[in-house]
Length: 246
Length: 246
Image (tube, rainbow over the protein chains, first blue to last red):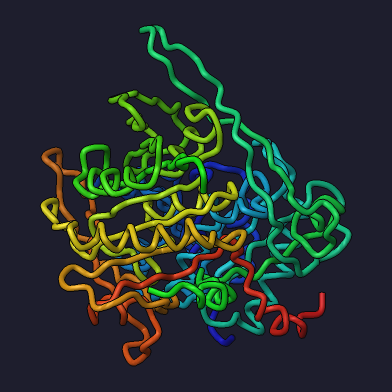
């Protein structure tokens, strides 16, 4: 690539999250004008606000009141002078393996970039703490980004990358683990006597034995790289439905 | 099925939406105790509140402050005495074809049911108006539900059903159209002089010629039935990534 690429960086932990700042730092090595549009998910039925927080050579930082997906849409449509060459999301504080890809704002931003035809990657570190150490994660980000910059990604496919907390033993191509979050709602009563619930829960891995999954990779100290499709059609099901005569 | 099944009904247009009321009416024909947990999407970082609005023989209605996905989780975990036999979501006011499956709260609820191992269907009518006529749509709901009740659905697969506005010519098994929403953010200034944006846009169909897609079916007066997978792994991409040597 002759010119330095335009890189849109987003996350869903907010503009001051350490994981985002570390991601900006590593992406500065590759891109000439990384931008950040980021926020936690909020309702999409309200108007969206953006604020320019910082402007310097090769880096403009915005906050956005919308969801991570809103941020990518707004950045591509209103803020950037051209479509970005890459959308890089994260580094999320906490893993987004298995079915979490469907709930994740980090992956929401990456998938939105992918829908727009832009090579896109979501990065997550398996450490929920605010003080998480991103030193090793940044090296992983650089290595994987270089491959995407060199080879591109197939149309309609982005990457869900999860990075282990401690030592990194290697990088594995993985599939999404079959599993689900088991909810345990904690019931409380507010000062006015009204009940409310906090959602808590734990992940239930439906295939503990499988060795080609993203949760297996992460648990065993490997980075998991899952190619993610935006086409949710279950092509294998058409055969099943053949017997339905309408 | 000997006993009448327990059916969880949800939507993302709110508890008073006509599409929901019509869906409850048609599902009463099949289920003994349909429940409704429903709301528009809001942030998931706040506590969730539920309100029982109505309780009668075979029908309990709740409103829920959370997202449609929250509603399904909360209903399955806290409200229902056992897991429902089916999760039926809708009838959405407006189509959810193509990439809209990823943004849709209606499909969010159905996909959440599917993740919990429950046969689940999301229904949408291609009519955004509040006064939409659901007469024909209800017949479609009944016909498709009967097939799912009779044959079940493969594990990890739910249905995204879109119903045309006018005459129904038939029911087509379709795949998700490749396409995207093109955003056009309308910029306004609030009374305090601060800028804000409303998201608007139009759907860009990337494959106008294809005849096996959900948008083609709907445009031509057919109901589209897309089997939807919860496994987003792009299996075809593993071959592409083989050349990446880490």
